[in-house]
Image (cartoon, rainbow, N blue to C red; front, top):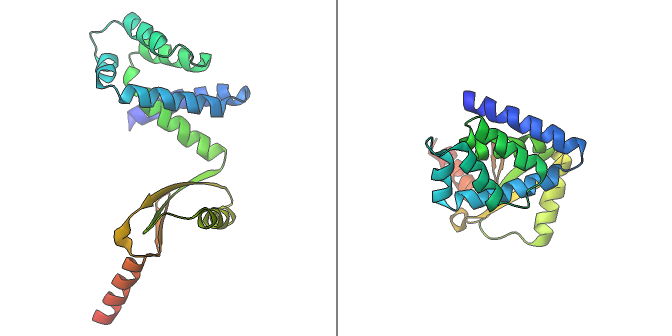
Length: 177
């Protein structure tokens, strides 16, 4: 998709600048705050996306709404607005985060359990996955009581379903023939 390629180019430029100065984590945190604030305000999204709003007003809005932004982000937002790509703010952020995880060798794993993980279980799971994947692990936890027990892991495109519900379904299929 063309828009994803455009977002990736901006994200790569931002990442390279931030990496050179050791500011990747700070940029990611500040950028995440901006995206959350913009998306929490539907009027802000409409304002930034509206083609009839002058670019000068959009830049002034972003400067006033986020006065403490790191200079790299301020420049990125101004560039996006000047190039009529203010609608790409979220897409660039997503690409930036993805690029950061790839280059820092961080695997994002979605873990779904029937009840919340204890701190000991979380650490044991994280350590095991880090050893198996050869990278740092960032867990995104979800609780789904209908699973009955066990764990379902989603790592990139792969799903490892070790839940009791899945085991019972496999047993049912095996018994049915």
